Figure 1 (cartoon, rainbow, N blue to C red):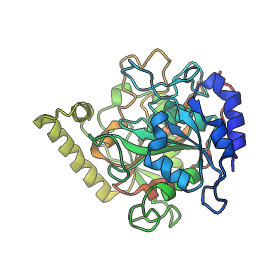
Figure 2: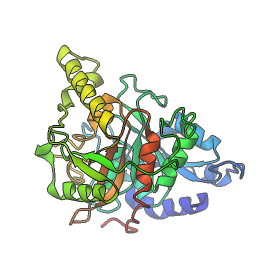
Figure 3: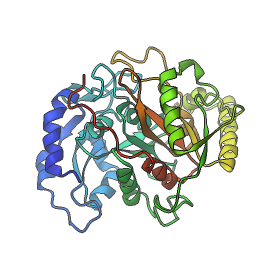
Amino acid sequence: MQTVDAALDRIAALDPVLCAFLEVWEEQARSARPDPELPLAGLPFAVKGRAGIRSRAARQLIAAGAVAVGATSVPGPGTYWQTWGMGAGGRTLNPYRGDRTPGGSSAGSAVAVAAGMVPLATGSDGAGSVRIPAAWCGIYGLRTTRGLLPSPDRTGLATAGVLARSAAEVEAYLRCVVPGYGHGTAGGADGSASDGALPVTGVWSADLGFAHADLDPDVVAVARRAAARFVSLEEEPDFALRDPKDAWFAVRGERETVATRALRRDNDVLLEQLFGRTRLLLTPTAPFPPHGHDGPDGRYSTALTWAFNVSGHPAISVPAGFTPDGCPVGLQIVSAFGTESLLARAAAAFGPCPQPPPRPR
């Protein structure tokens, strides 16, 4: 297990280039003396933004013995696209490709984990803000079911989440943060992440029926190969959600209309029917690789993620591989309400994250 001292030393070495942190709490972290009997005793972790230390997740992790080492970067002011971060020393860089964004808005959390500065960081996901940076930085990123954990977002779109280097950290987060997890009361009917094998089938959809215009063929190919390695894929050509964009903006602006309510209802019915006949839905996490720091050029990196913010389903991005030019690709796995334990088991099927180069190229 990575120690606090090792985490702080790695932050000191890498963060001047990567700019993943807004603040590093070195003195406080080095002097922490958690009870060695606690389940996460001495585990270093980071929190999303300066306010992250006040979140339920941070409080529960600390209560379990983990040590907060700093607050990670989030997008700066005046940015309408939330796919970058601004750390204390400048813009946050993708640890694999310094000319590309790490994704966001949990940008610094993803980079801190991907670069090995910490094994785990908190995040929040209102449209893909955990899953997209996880995908673009080659790590794990889980968003929880709506209502499972407290959220300051009164619209219900944003839920708490975690970014991690392995399934073990995802599982540790869930066990320490989610009330009753692993006892069949909050982790879903599946119980804990170690109570059985994964289901052998899942439904694959490259575009959810509407996002084909933005799909990058290399991303789709990498994600689909990764999915096929651990689950038998079923194709359902007739499965197609309605594009949730209008509903997402209506909910976010608290100005829903008859039309957007009907859109949400239609998708809710389609997802309920889907999870009535299969346990997993698999897609690429983002439709294209990480873009440059000048922006996404009118494309929506959220095209495949925000449907599940509107519906409230849990979802995880797992590292699927790389495009030919060295950009990480994520595979998104979605399941029924309250089945975080099933997603933790899915994460366990993929093994640890690849180690990025010590400096972004």
